[in-house]
Length: 137
Image (cartoon, rainbow, N blue to C red; front, side):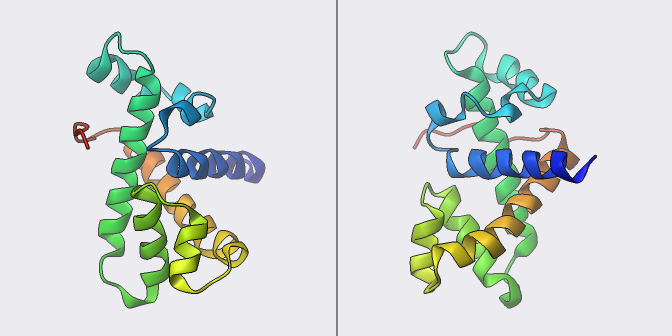
């Protein structure tokens, strides 16, 4: 995969992570067209409106939680874990930066780039498989 293609996919994953709780914002995300997402949408959501967006949200959140488990309690990755936890909960990169006492620009250019790449790696490795059912909030 070319570097520019990889960066486009990482940006699509970053967008999906930031909007996993806001399904309308996922409708134009290129990851909704991934075969694993379409398959999950058909299996889990049948004829539901926005089934692909629901499935993408499920897959992205599952991959993000897997990354969080892998990060564990490693003190060297506290900033990345805090950022990912904030975004998974529906918060913004800006709110994570404020909580960490950093500028949004700095966090976006460092930890957010890294974290969204890790979640993309997990997404590509899992092919959207083994996603737990959506639970109502």
